[in-house]
Length: 239
Length: 239
DNA sequence: CGATAGCTTGAGTAGATTCAAACAGAGTGG
DNA sequence: CCACTCTGTTTGAATCTACTCAAGCTATCG
Image (cartoon, rainbow over the protein chains, first blue to last red):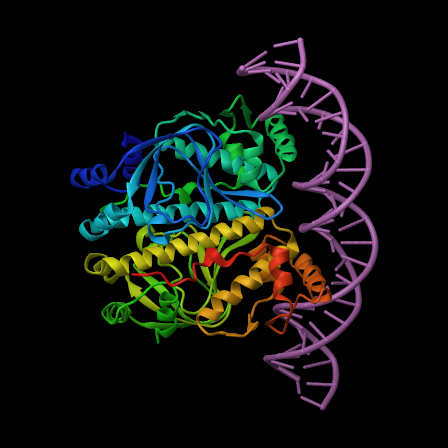
């Protein structure tokens, strides 16, 4: 069940079979959620963390006026609230974007890992630092990229991340989001996302229809977004 | 020398004297930098991490066109590139905003801490997760807050963070930044920052002159920004 | 077949940008 | 000591990107 999670970890570091066993032993139970459900509310006390097995989730923060900002998207294999292990309460909510299956990991078992598996601890620490790196790239998008460049950067990022868990067919992949969800990621309105998608389509850069992304001109998109995937830390590092 | 760093850690968790000794032993040497110097370039291989003892620093990412986005500000006591311990190369640059004094900590000593001090390891892991939490709050600002609300949120955040290391005089504090630096934090142009600061001043909310922030109407600012400081995790947690 | 969610397009507006110029203050050298 | 420069701040005018409000469209589902 935890295969994609291991793929994700092994894309960046070596995981010994002993460590693999420790991870498998840490997993408690599996849960299924419907689409559009908040599974963790901001400020809630946490006793376990959650590995996303299947489906898409989002971390989000809201403003009083109801404006929502998604701060990160999660794909299968991601530890969606591993940071909750040290934070104990989250500063944000986590919601499903599609139907999802997750595995839970009790915090006391994570604590045991920090006692007994220093290397694996660093791997998981790295994993939360990777989330922070993605946050920084999104800050760059939100602060300095045009609407078109933001969309390009988002679609390029999702392709790389989905490819790690073998969920991309070459340049194409499924992304079962509404345009309103994209707007919440990009700090735009749904209407403007719609217009900008049309632009990208008319320029032959990509299409996004029926919840599927088709990348038509990757070099063009990379140029438009000034996309540099090093922030995803996809090189395997020596132990 | 490391007093503010300990203050910062102890604002959030208990640090035993034994752990304090371990931290002091991990510190290698002190370095002084002038203002406006990039001390770590994106992608550079890292062998040590850096505690900011005095002065202000920023993490930043640039776009091809030269637009710069600051992703986080650092105040004295912060471990500015602790995440570099697990990432090994940073996805962003780090620059001084003022003259700074830092202490360096070799990565092999951090690795020793992960072997010998599980609780302290979690404290430092928490610390990088706190950085990520600040990133998320900034994503919210950049994506959904108006220019005035972004400024308000930034000034409120800096007051809280500086108060932890006793660098705030009640509601006022020194913030030796130019308006251009604020613009790079907030995803705005310097011109618009200037106009928006004027607005805040005319509404009696705050003044920012001569590198000093004077908070005149905190409730008004909190309302304007919808500021909720829980993302700074300032409550002391039980061990 | 109507209801609903999501997508699309149009028209008018607002917030932020760009370009430009003027101004203030600190530091420098003659 | 004063002209000069440099950096940073301030203001104005024109423009543009993205937003708002609104309506029409499409596909899906009970």
